[in-house]
Every structure is written in C-alpha cells, then in structure tokens.
Amino acid sequence: MNHTISIERTRQSKLNSVDFGNLPFGKVFSDHMFVADYAGGQWQNPRIVPFAPFSIHPATMALHYGQSIFEGMKASKSLDGQPMFFRPEMHAKRLNISATRMCMPEVPESLFMEGLHALVDVDQDWIPQDEGSSLYIRPFMFATDEFIGVRPSETYRFIIFTGPVGPYYPKPVRLWAEQQYVRAIKGGTGEAKAAGNYAGALLPAKIAQSKGFDQVMWMDGREFKYVQEVGTMNIFFVIDGKVITPSTDGEILKGITRDSIIHILREDKGMQVEERPVSIDEVVAAHKAGKLQEVFGAGTAAVVSHVSEIAFKDELLTLPPVETRKIGNMIKSEIDGLRSGRITDTRGWVVPVKSPVFVEE
Image (tube, rainbow, N blue to C red; front, side, top):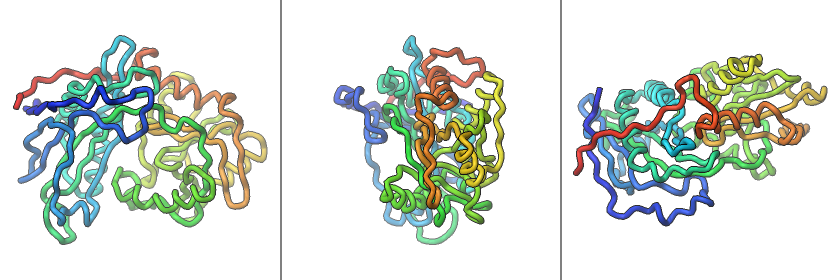
C-alpha cells in the first residue's frame, strides 16, 4: 500500500552546526520528523515536518496511564555513500508486538516503512560516514486522548525522529547482579518496548552506579537465580568456547541484534549457540574454573558492549581483557561491516533507503 506523505521542509537546517567528530548519544537531532495520527479507527495525515516541540493537553492519557511504546534502530551509509537500514522490517513487527501488549493499535508495516524511508531520505546528510557511527532512529507511539480514566485511548500519535550518534558504550562495563529489584516477570510487559519498563529500571541502575558499577544485570523475579538482561540489552556468555544466551520466555525482549548475532554465529561461523536459562551459579562456577571467557551485552545502540566485571553478592568476577576476546569483537566487526557495506550482505538484512514521492506543502 502506498501512502501519500506530505512534507514541510525546514527553513533553516542545523546540520552545519553539528560536530560529527564529537557526537554525544541522544542529544543531537536531525532537521525533520515523520508524524501520523490515529483517530476513528485508522491512521491518517502522514507527514514530514520540521523537528520541533509540540503541545499536548495536560490530561493526555499517555502521561497518566503509560500507553507509550518505542523502537530503536539505525541507518548507516555504505562505502559508496548509499544510505541503508539494518533489518528495518523486524523493528516494524516488534513495534506492533509492543502495541498489542499495551492495548494500542498496530501501525501498518507499509506506513512504518514508507515513513521511515521518506524521513531518512530527506535527512540522509545527517548520517555519519565513519564505521561504528550511525543515524539513530526513534519510532514511538503514545496515547493522545484528553481524558482522565483508566481505559485504552481512542487516539494515538506515531512519530519517527532521528539523530546522528557516535559509538555507544565505548568502554567495557561493570555489572551489579541485582538481588532486590526486577525488570520483568512472566505475564508482564518484558517483551514490549514500553516506556514504563525503562522508568522502573532507573532506581536500581542508580543504586548500582552509586556502588561504582555501570549497569544492572537483571535476574528473574522468582528466585533471583536466572540471568535475564544487562541494562537495556540482551546478554551473551562465552563459557569454555560455547556461546550461551538466556532464552526469550516472555520476560526478555526479543532483541534484533540478539537474533542477528545468533544467525551469524550459527550459520556463518558454524558455532553452537545455546538459548536456555542461565543461572548465576553457573556463571560463578565457570569463572572459578577459569572457563568464563566473555560476557557482553547486545543491542541496537551499542551492538556489543563488553563486560569487564560482575558483582554478585560478595563475589567479584573479573573477565579477561577485551583485546583477547574473540566472539564479541568479531560480532561487532561483522555487524558494523554489514552496515557499512564492508561485508557483503547475503540475507537481505541491509535495505537501501528509497526516495519517495512527496506532496510538498
């Protein structure tokens, strides 16, 4: 389905004011954003407008009852300057999984993809050329009914905005294995990228940082025995040459980077990857036996974030130096290489940005 997208171009680009050699994550935003509204049971008025604040009513339901979801994805440029996405359709599908769980309307994949292509085509000059840097893309949706009452909203707004970013989490991180707070439980919203999930994680993350650690390693909410995620990322362990990651059982976000890593390791590298429950006791025992070779987080922003230490109760597990690690370093190079065109894509994961036809305002 083709949607008619109107466009209002900015009168004054901010591009020339950006230092692309020093890009803090999440603080620099491109010139435009894509917007569509849901009312009367359908999405309408898809448009690209200058990136700017917008006003909302104090009783906007998202502010009170938390119907708010988002995605995080990236665009990069190939070696010959072609703007590209990495597995964009997976993000469209996952946004709708989140929408269903949060009792929100799905965004048609065609609308998501057309809005995405249109926006990045307009702002493609904002894509950094350096490998490891990228244009971060934030699609999100929130409830817009002006009503104080606990029920699903009848109106919503879907927005995509972007901003150039440099490498994320450039240094290895120290983890605190949380023993009091939980991220998600079965039957909860752990598989949805719901805004409230991240709000609930802020306090334990702050406590971990006050102890000298960078992030929380989340444990299950029944026994605090099984590892779930690390910070806002999926987690991988390399134990005695075997790659292990917690299975997605309803509590853990089905990461697209996670899925990509598993495919690359299994199909390209011929390695065994186990998706199963991983207990903290197994991790501690592997460390004591000298078999815990790598731990890393995996997500869109960081791709791979190496873990240097894990604190569990009164034990501190120190991992081998990052320079000696084979799996995490190789995976980051592979995915960055696919995004830059340095490595040939054989799966159709890399999708060139298509130039749409706009209705100029």
